[in-house]
Image: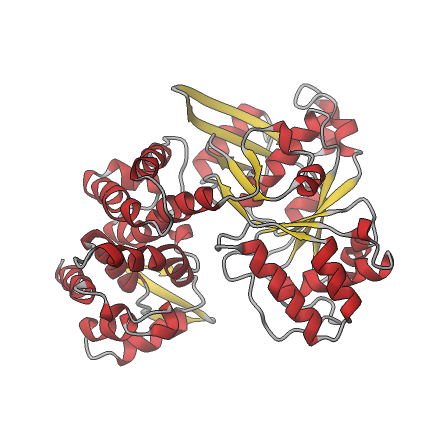
Length: 491
């Protein structure tokens, strides 16, 4: 017998699934969110939903789908309701629960519904904006703010804020709290700078610029929760059977959650969902949270993903179950990255955080696909790991061997063997994999023209424009990378 699909109608028929769902679905829209990804649904949307169920925030989220790929059909069919499986170990106890999330009110495709999105700007109740458009989403590009829609996320946001400014005649009360969650250092600060630059380029006026600067809060923030991509078929089948319904929007996450937001009392007041969960932290400075997570969890992910994938593993859990790759992951994190974090902190603090990260990597319920971690591989390597590498050399003239090994695997992973339908593909054990990175064409050219893998390594490492520094000038690092490339070529 086929299972029914999750929907408001199913909740009507099965009130045991979510008591009080009728009231939750009637809450007003108070947030606009740029991005439909699992990280947003598994963390910010999770917190908002939890607050709504506690009667604290009482507001829903309008989601903007900014990319051109995929559609909003699943969201439409389920009226934006989805289930969230939370699995893992917390304080020595196994957690395995399912949450029905009703926080999203609408999902609008920017390319098709730009006027409806601008209508949200005219809604006085929508005072919060959230985003996750990946690390490459917060970029300054030539844009047309009069287009429907502008092509970049900062362009869309600028046009949205300008519409709001005009609607409410630049009143102080109409300002917004904007919280990007893209994993770049100073994400709020950078987004603010780009929006101001777009306003300047498009001659939107001094009064609008002043409104942006003084009445809107662009908050630096950090998100930390492992929320893999779409669960595999076995997990979907297992959870569907247990839940008693089918959910095409199902997400799975670990138990651990953190959303650290840099803000003052006004930000705290606006983000009134925060008290619903201790995982939301609003503080004047979040640098420590950011550095620990960015350098140890994400930095290790980036260094280990290509290496483990080319080694034959498909998920982080598989990598942790293999003694060889598990040892690599532990060593690169605790012995090389932790002591070199470009932030002043006690080593014991970094080691304690790293130990918890390793436990999270071992979570038996999470199947975090390594190939998903390699999306925008080059940008991630530059932002997450190169600053740590440079800081390592402030205290040492010895090359970090495990870092070099991971970097060599990155170079190997970024070797295309096929260019088809606009995409680049690498090869592992005779099977193709997609290289989903904006630098794929760059590496295709480098690999084709390099005299050898060693020449390729030299060319890429010496590209100061790519990395922000000439990495061949770091004592011993080029030789260490080349040594590991030679080993991979002969393995």
